[in-house]
Amino acid sequence: MGLEFTYEMKGRYLSIVASGVFSIDDARRGFHRALEVIEGYQATRVLVDCRQITGSPSTMDYYDYGELVAEALTGPARKETSRNLKLAHVAQPPLLDERRLSETVAQNRGVMMKSVDNIEEALAWLES
Image (cartoon, rainbow, N blue to C red; front, side):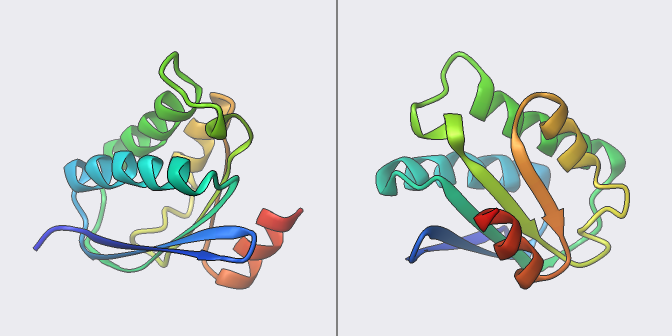
């Protein structure tokens, strides 16, 4: 079973809930689909709830995900909406890397992304 995603606008932010077994290929496909939904809603704040994902990504998976997010949001193909996008991920270990490698890779490339272990912190960051 791969990753599945649901999307819902909740006031000022788009909520994406992901579930299933992690694979970088599914995460890549899911993120590209999420970009279409983000554009459709013209969302500038996105909360990705990954607490229902199982699996243990490798260090390269964390790096690759951060790079994929950065390329999609800052590369030449970026859309207008992505310029001011704030993206918060909520997950639990082992899916949430304690070193926050995906976050660091994306931020180093100009993306406003935060990875945390609770919804409250993610929402507070999105509103800041």
